[in-house]
Length: 433
Image (cartoon, rainbow, N blue to C red; front, side, top):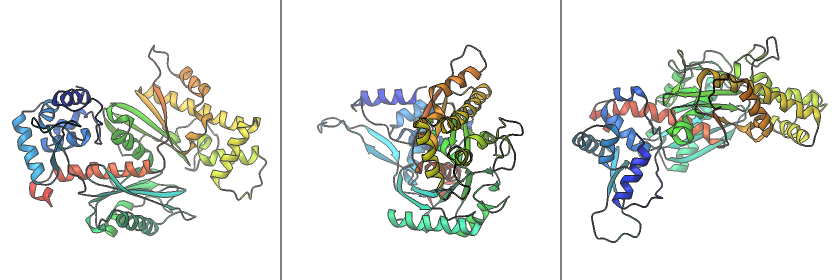
């Protein structure tokens, strides 16, 4: 079924113009296990995904009776999840009955999404419809973070967001948090993160107790992937990969319309795939990882040699990388070779991703995507040359430069995903609270 096409056809029939923008967020295609969810959750998520949709279209898309949809949507309106809106054609006169559609009631059940990073921390405040209503950012203080420091940073961001949006912090329903490293999503344990001062940190429990609200933690690359699945190019795709290149290298993968995390929630660690036995030292403690050749710290390490910089060079990572990139563009062979080697290792990794998972699309995202050497034509050609020859076309590769808030938006999507399941799987009384 093509929900977007069918919906456009409906509105064209009902008098909407063909260029009407479809709002909404969340996957437009549902996974195979979505039918196991309560029907009211399916109805709500479908309305949220399409943004604005008539009851008859919901019944058609979900293949349930119009009477069932009417009963369920009446309950969802009564409990404050949905509302009816009129959608007349622009310029339409008062003659005729305007079309009536459903949409998620805006401005209720707020969640917060936070991304902690090596450089600065970002946060967004969103309502149950997925609309972002406030954003905030703050620089990272030097050194690794303790659990108490994470709570302090998150609290400061929360106060800033709530003040901007005019929302009481006590009214927040859930918090989504993204960190780099290895995260056990089932338990909420952060097994290792380069920004935390200890391993096996029970960050989820600590923050939940501190803020008295549910806290959901995931690897930051998974959150970028959720952002693409909820708000971006992945909304209508069943299988796609997102590779992030910043201070580290991460990957998220959507399989059958759902984020794949592995048996313990810690799969898809592309940055720690070995590309050189006994090679360069990675910050994880092992050698030869992809990250040790492509990530920020790897490029900076090579830049100190290529640019003949002293060991006590005090410029920031960003400034050093910009200098290296300028040198490469100016024709410095040593600087050019650093990006060229990083691009070759990246092409090897992308070929392996293609051979293993056969994605429809590979999205390259992150701060380093402004360094075009990493995705130059010869890099992508080399990726194709290392793919198994099966006669299939190589997956499309796209560069997405969303900006810093994409990570926090993914964290908000994580919070919304779990909050929706909790509220719409509960009794009517609990859902209405």
